[in-house]
Length: 66
Image (cartoon, rainbow, N blue to C red; front, top):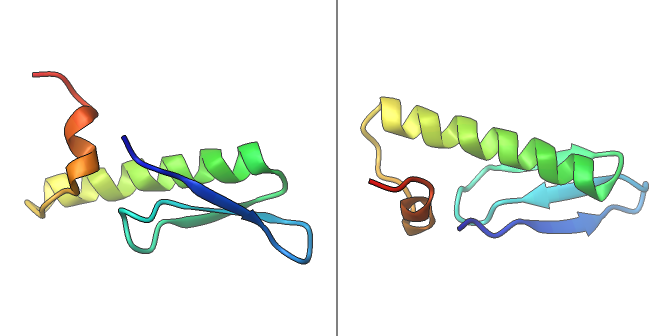
């Protein structure tokens, strides 16, 4: 399972980050929106890594059952 960290910026926007996937940061006008954008981006990064044969973080092992 991937951990998502959120924080409210001084300008009122929310930012969400997935620490296990460097560069996965997304903004939203509220916390749920920021989380949703971060999840979508994380899934894109995971798919790209799979397509290119790159390693996935350990957190990805619980995404699918064999």
